[in-house]
Length: 332
Image (tube, rainbow, N blue to C red):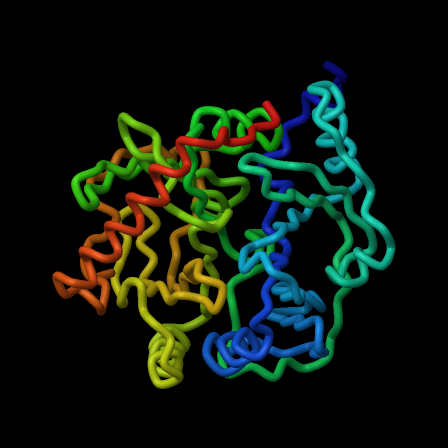
């Protein structure tokens, strides 16, 4: 391995943008602009783009049938870090392609590279976002981004060891902690990975024992962190008033101490809207911990009646059983 490839990428990678494919652009505009409170930067019949900070585009919704996250863009600190990662991919014979200029413009970056990541989710790499100093027009007072990136993604997997290896070997991800949760007769084990000071940028969830994947979408949920507790409560009220379903009402996690709620997006995956998430500021003193239970308090589903639970659990079981019929892709 080259000297360059031996340099750690920890602290040099952050979540830069998410690209969503949906036929429901009108609903996504309402959900994101009026509910979550983001700045609408661009709107057309085939595209929506939203700002959270100086980046011209953080959340992009393109017209298409998937109703899913189509790609996640990861920002590298500089060209040296990008070349380091591209070298690692080359050494492992993982194919990478350069994005077209028109695709880069759509994402709000100067240029980017693309690879097929775990579960087939497109992983996109870039160094230079297009930025602007134009004032933000948001219902939220702001979001926590900066060196930690725009948030995190949580992914369910039937091959969590392979997915963990992908993030650790290629991105130098570090395990922040693990959580076990009992759900509908099954145990879910979740590993939280940090790429920088943010407590986690990637969470990997897997059923214990028989590995099933009950989630239709590539990403189970995506997270963003608001600047104030008022932003949290106001977004919660707006989304409920607009009629969006809360998958989990306001609660607090034991590991990153974030207070948050989960709302079901127009494409079916969940958006976690949080506040006051912990950052790891002293790497030398941090110790990974195993927690039992995903919440200290709250995070209860608002629809918790027996019929709702039976229908939901039956749907999850059917999707989980069908997942056994198809292998889960892994680049490593």
